[in-house]
Length: 292
Image 1 (cartoon, rainbow, N blue to C red):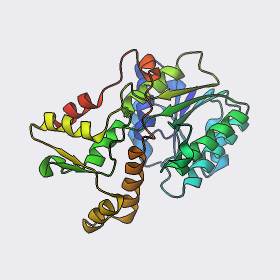
Image 2 (image 1 turned 180 degrees about the vertical axis):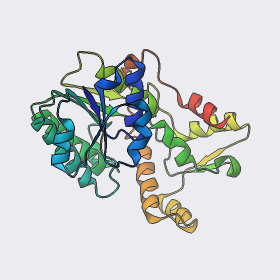
Image 3 (image 1 turned 180 degrees about the horizontal axis):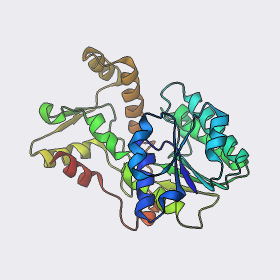
Image 4 (image 1 turned 45 degrees about the vertical axis):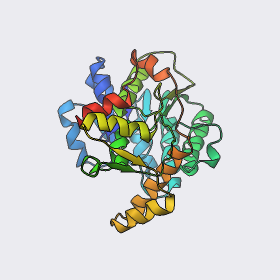
């Protein structure tokens, strides 16, 4: 039995879809959800739906009973970073109590010097989770996923075609963007094949691009020139504030733009390509599909 947490989220639901495509019987897939109302979207897949909350250890132990492999999709809690770490540790403790044999965990890519990164706290949460998982005594597989390619349109702005400009303080920083669905496909491949216990995989693209290159791809896709400008952090924050963007989103955009500018997400690797059996989707192909 494979149980996938975060089953109503985009990554979790994608993993379930790829497990089904690989011929795994619905009766051998369990989906963990917290919100019973949201679980309705899974009804047509005739899955074993279980309910549990990362903050409720007893509910997790109950949900994990009879599970051989736990696909632990990292928490998307939007409050304090510490909440995510606590959620993951609660899940690992519950899995051990329920005698789960193997945990596959979706972590995040990082470089050795991540402590100086703009997302150091976010990455440290994954580091602490990985360490706790390794010390738990349960067989593990850690997937250090790259940044989602689907974030590019968000950073570019919904009116990029109208305005003809990308305004983001990412300088010339590169990132190895990856499609969320291809990460889900790779996770399903790992869940259904052997030889992955107690291993860590970096799942990023084989290319890394700047927003200057993304602007050129957008120009080609839209048939008009799209400029890219990297203002100072201060000017960028003022632009967003004057546009009425909430403070929480200003902080998020600034944090990730700073991370891109420092090159923390420029980690090219061919492991994902190996699991997919093909090269991952390129940014230019993604943009052509989304914007053409």
